[in-house]
Length: 381
Ligand SMILES: Cc1cc2nc3c(=O)[nH]c(=O)nc-3n(C[C@H](O)[C@H](O)[C@H](O)COP(=O)(O)OP(=O)(O)OC[C@H]3O[C@@H](n4cnc5c(N)ncnc54)[C@H](O)[C@@H]3O)c2cc1C
Image 1 (tube, rainbow, N blue to C red):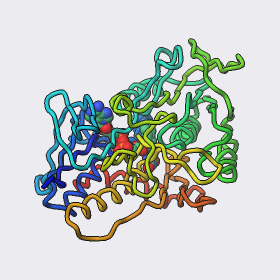
Image 2: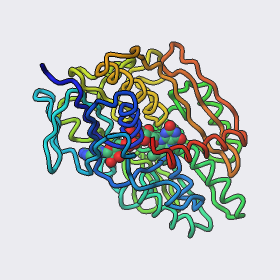
Image 3: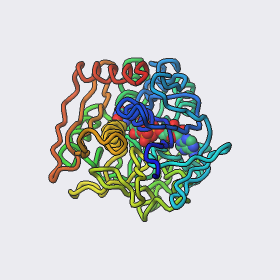
């Protein structure tokens, strides 16, 4: 009789940590292996605060571990290939056989796609870059701070807008004469939430005096200026640009991606076109049934909801108990706007039209965001 209980999870970020832990809880007889190249677990939603000196490194990252009682084997290694035909995965040091595979490998950054980006721009989408930005922000006394998005899609599309608002507030409180400007290829902020909510965020930027340049595609970065397609330019004294994102090459080489460049999955079950191979989180491309954006945004709240569904359904397949679940596209994100307040966006992104709510800035949403940080940094699953 063929086996059905070997589960391999690739990547132990938000999605991978959640799926492996929830599965271990629901199917104690499963043999679960998770492969992760890093020895630490990070909470990226706090990277803006890290860059601003409002969080210390120990608050946003911790040593990666899964409690012994969970019986998950954690391999600290790099995934080097995925072979769906033989149901095997190779790491640098071993070969793993699976009955069920969950791919939760997130994104890679590709700053080299834009000439000059790596040399002249800061970013805050990984820990080391956020720490470098922190040093640069400390020395900025006046002038123009330009923040922008180079290419779409990106993770948490409101995060760069949040950073712009937080920095404007920060420099205003410090009585430093720093003007914040923002550019993006998007027609308006948070396009997945539609133009009405997008305009609300745009008004928020305007109310803080942040000039917004939409629908621009960055073609190169030079010392002290950015150049867009069409040759328009914006000079700056400090530049922060979200780098282009791409699907990890191991996933592309395995033939799991399509013309979107990401892994197409069933929105309800997160199944790929390969039998018993699932993908969750940022690595996926999930088509939306409405016209706001072609694909769902990349977000940790989606990764967590998807992890719950996939863990449940694999556990059911192994134990024969329980009920199949489907994912409904529920998600939320916080938009930090100043030192004490966040706005909040939540809803069902897969309904048509999407059912979304935008809650203006309040202290309570800031408290909720801090709770989320504590949840991910302290919960051992
Ligand atoms: C600045 C910032 C702010 C954000 N704010 C929010 C927010 O407010 N709310 C929200 O919901 N989301 C937010 N996000 C997005 C959120 O962090 C991601 O959507 C979430 O982490 C996705 O989870 P994931 O498991 O798909 O990928 P990740 O958490 O990125 O995990 C992928 C893992 O795979 C590993 N991996 C990749 N390749 C290999 C390989 N070859 N071998 C072994 N391991 C590999 C990586 O090391 C990584 O640990 C933010 C992100 C950023 C950068």
